[in-house]
Structures are given as C-alpha cells and as structure tokens.
Image 1 (cartoon, one colour):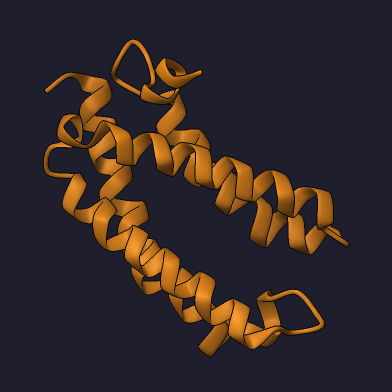
Image 2 (image 1 turned 90 degrees about the vertical axis):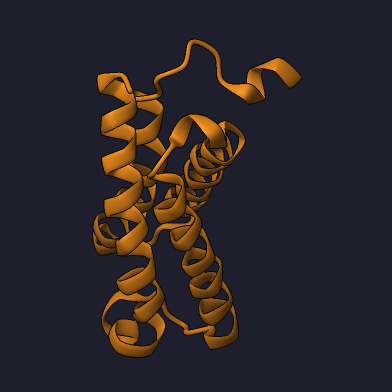
Length: 125
C-alpha cells in the first residue's frame, strides 16, 4: 500500500466514523444550532441517512481503498458538488464555516491524496 493510499485509508476511516456519529446526529441533537433556517426536518433526516450509509461504506472501504475506486470517485464528486451548492445558497459566515467547509473537505481531501493516476470519472468524459 502506497503512502497516498494509507492517507486515503485513514481519511476514509476517520471521516466515515464522523459521518456515522456526527453528521447523522445533527438533525436530532444539534439541529437548532447548526442547521439552516427555516428548518426542513424530512430533508435533514434524509441527508443524515445518506451520510450514515456513506459513512458505513467509507469505513468498510478503508481496509482496501484500491478495490473501491468508483466509490471514492463518487465520494469526491458528491461532496464537492454538495459543497458548491451549499456555498451558493449560504446566507452567512456560520453556514460557510459549519456546513460548507466540512462537506468540502470530505470531497477535497480524497482528491488531494488520490493514489491512482486517473480518476474513473474522467474515463467517462
């Protein structure tokens, strides 16, 4: 396993656990403090469920990231697009700090430590 793949593995494990235990609890525990207003509880719960599932797969993928290149490509694209949409719709600095930056990092970090030469999604374009 190369150094970049080790870093990617660490990222997948740490951010996977963060997705499972932090992001998914935001609507239920931290909602009034961290979520945008007006609240939209069904959408918040749906997004929490998506990030829970993504977190579980991230932890499982951390063991051997080279076997899951397509998932890692999805992780990069989904989080960068999510962050881009969020920054366009952000209304204040708190939304940028607590929402946009963490989601952006979830897409940017694996992009920086990507251990393979070409990303799978570039083959399609």
